[in-house]
Amino acid sequence: MTTTRSSRVPPPPTLPALLAGLALLACPWTQDALAHGLPRPVHGGSTATQLDLGFEIFRRGGEIVVYVTDHDSPFATDVFSGHVELGRELVALRPAPGGLLVGTTTSKRPDLRRSVVVLKARVLPAPLRIDFAAPPP
Image 1 (cartoon, rainbow, N blue to C red):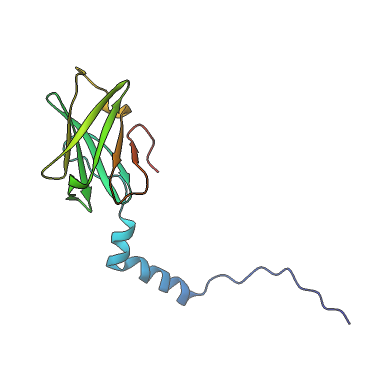
Image 2: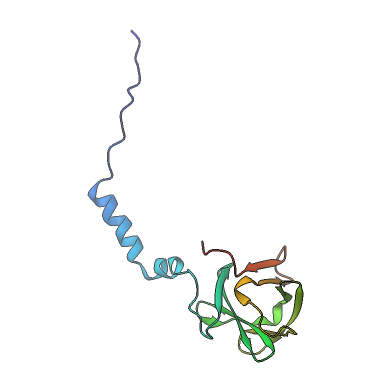
């Protein structure tokens, strides 16, 4: 006698399993983990996210400023070095208090929505590339 496996569809999730999933989503620590999206622009600039950090790029006079946040709080930028790519111009960035990286540009009206920020840190295995022109994930 031979037996054949039936190609039955697995049963739908039970009500207790659905309730357990909803309870997990309602937990406060789960909400924090799921709350990461594009950060709100604090200075009216363009925003992006990388490695669970928020980045906002904006212009202040003749300076290009990158504001770095971790969970909506300023992130210590003294661990970073890097630059902003504004077309053909590379603007070196230096750490500043309050979660800022600042660089001086020669461009009169740089298009920051097409900029790319490249940051290095000792704790990162490779440079971090933040493309403000890329569509959000």
